[in-house]
Image (tube, rainbow, N blue to C red):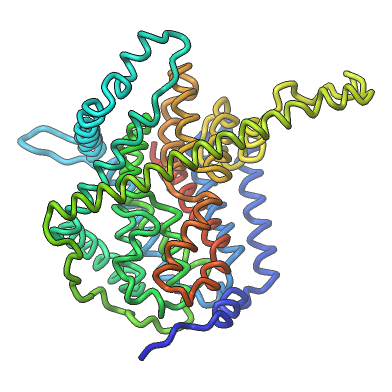
Length: 481
């Protein structure tokens, strides 16, 4: 019987021994690339910025790697190759049907329209229950300039519907077949274990606490590197239900769909770069798992169970938004009161000339994450705005960031360029935020209680790598747009 690795083995793996001189050298190289890109931005343009971003984001993970000497570079090479191929196919790929030329992006956009129509089905159910409250256009005509988007009646019902449909697909076995096909391809090329590859593939459709259920029998005995990959992938992806919600917020469907697929190889190779495999996984070289019998009696039972799960998720989303938006408002009020407070204490206006009158978390995030937005390939006039959205996503959650995005777009459809909107959707699509660390420790810890200490040790590091994965996806897309 295979026993769970001890926490000491995780601690040892995290301090594997990358020489400090290597870390310093990589850090200096990243700094030089960033400064060169900034100094030459007029010559290299946004696409050149994205190329520099790819090098820097990869370099940052390499610099923080637990043991660069143990990295399997075949895994890294094939991972980067698959990520680039997927990006090229979607953003540049073309094919002919009946003498007419089509682009893969056009096909993805068409699929996005299908998804929007799919969301429309949930709107019909919501309108039956909530009436005109589920019709924002009707409410906008009534309230005029005082109109506020009815989030609970418009944005939350699709979560219930999509959860029910995905649970039905799981009951019918269709979801597992697609996941296994993807896992076989990546495991054979990247030499990753079957369990971690299968769970990463499942993240395209399932959330950060649902996808580990596909391999729940193996989670207790996973190596530290496998467990880390499991967590990183959860942060770098979103669930199928959230995919539809973000599209409903106004995110570009092609960007959301593309980044979800690109995140599979990206989260795998970045995980193995940060925490290389130094043990022998139980499922090394195999993605053949016993087909578990569906826990549901029939399709009706699956739909009912999926609806209940969706309700829990929707209520959790609503509760998190209420609390976090309230906290943001509180911090904004505190930040805005600093300058008046200093003036009341006797400081002169001249001494506080550089202090903004409208200091807020959004402005602070814009300053902190402006370099990140620059390296993604965001145009100069949009850097502060996109930086604030990235900061909101990491510190609060992606829902809050997307709602900010939606409100800014509603106020001014041209608040940022089309390129910046597309790259922002790539970067915001993921569960990489601080609250998700607790969600993963609780969710995966319920599957493997003996690994909670390991999950806690790996949590912040996995969040870091998962966030970098979303940025790297955006930068690669920025090179091609």
